[in-house]
Length: 278
Length: 278
Image 1 (tube, rainbow over the protein chains, first blue to last red):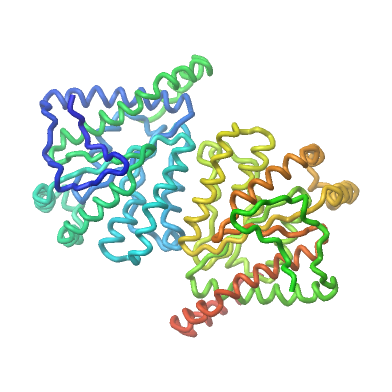
Image 2: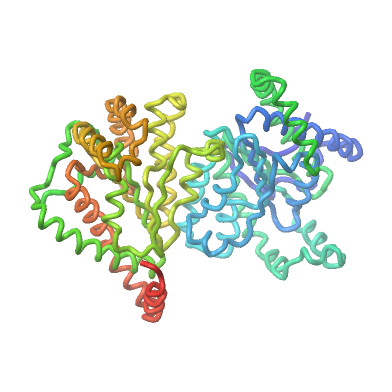
């Protein structure tokens, strides 16, 4: 089977303009949507094992241009996962207190503890993306951040954090259509910030910044996945499949660990979850 | 003048048993005590410049065996510094939530923002000290932490954190006297935990762990200072002088920065501080 996402091999060159945002891997849309539904339930089951075993965390990082669907993908892919064992953090313009600290401070604080799934909607990568495009710090400062990011993610990986990083790859044309659609839909217009069209003018600068970030910060422990994202059904399916496949790799050891802890623990967890709002 | 502390040069070998805890650098006690008083006021002035300029932070890490005087030294050296611009954090046995995260998580959260002095009474170094001595994690885990610590401190240094690390070096004999004194003084007996005498039995293991930690984690950005600490007056003076000398090196740039910001800012700060409990 053709791979669903374009995984950035450590040390390889990244040229986003060589990757087709409309790539579909030969999939059928109706089938993919049906499979996605099944995958979301499987991800829920895998999350229960992650939680129960308590030996690993999962950190999911979502990056992409405005309208690329970071929020929408998270809603779909993790739709069945209990809020007890997962959370989403959106990183906005830093506060004064956040700016007074190193750029990794605010993200480190929000990393998932063992048993948890933490999802970052934007992340520390903004500090080599928007910060670079708008010259918010000198080049000498942001250039050093690639290494700092790799060191940081290495530390997380050393404490059993599974790291998945998704770049949602849309075309400039697709973005235009989505921005226009937002403008014209009264229920979505609130999502459109005044700056969105202005940011779009820096498209090429952003692409260059993404090329470098993905190239410099893809490691064996924390590889980047480029997700063709012009088609929402494909994007959701590709991300869900990547999450599920990654977690499946741990299923055996989590079950073994849970076996040791005993069946009661899992029953307790189920009872606990039954009492929680879904 | 003879150096007051034994700075660990990066890459050099550390053998604590070769350093005399009663070393006095030929100083006169009465003179040193008088000079310490002056130094505490100078440190207060330097802290105001650090705060006003807002370009750097100071992180002070205090490590040492039980009764080595971590708390006492901090009280003395920073006695004149405003609580508005400084704070002390004591790191105790990790909580469940802290243990669920990487070992640097809880310390990163407490690092000082720009303009602030943050003092760590114990620190992430416990994760290669007590954790090693008591086999709380496998050797393969704590051995990797030296690099993780260096990466972490490098990140802090890159965002203008000045890092001072003091190991308060007392002799085993001196510790015995202090533990006995605590036992016999009803106003101090509460400080004596049941485990203190028991920990003492692991003295040699702790010394080996300290030798390695100081050797592996002394960098140009964040060097270790070994402070002879059997004599309290000497220990306090040596730490105060090292803090003052370090901050003096930035005085020129902070004054220049404050000059730019204008005199008003400093006046505002003084007014603000006058209204605070000292």
